[in-house]
Image 1 (cartoon, rainbow, N blue to C red):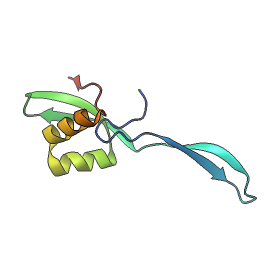
Image 2 (cartoon, rainbow, N blue to C red):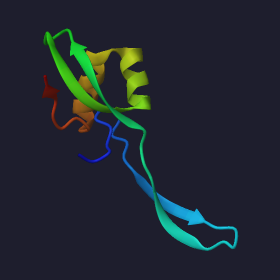
Image 3 (cartoon, one colour):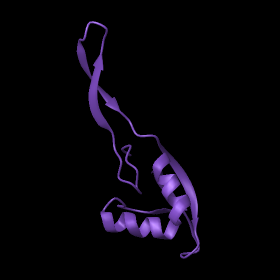
Image 4 (spheres, one colour):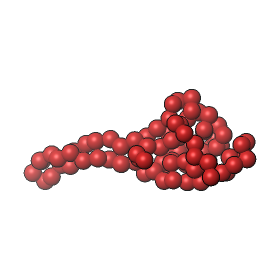
Amino acid sequence: MSRVCQITGKKAITGNNVSHSKRRTKRKFNVNVHTRKFFWVEQNQWIRLTVSAAGLRIINRIGLDAAIKKAAADGNLTEIRTL
């Protein structure tokens, strides 16, 4: 699976490695994503999401159900894996 946050939609971006002599080579800036299990109280089931550190903070701030609804409305949430 690609390194994309299911809550925020963050994904890897490209940039340059710049050496001391200013030579530039392409590199990738990956997202800090983790696969975490959450208990979704409204559906009474465990789910597994790939979330970034910012996504975890959003879930802690507004709650899991509101974060899932917002991510689905934004088009970031493609599928929810149940356990």
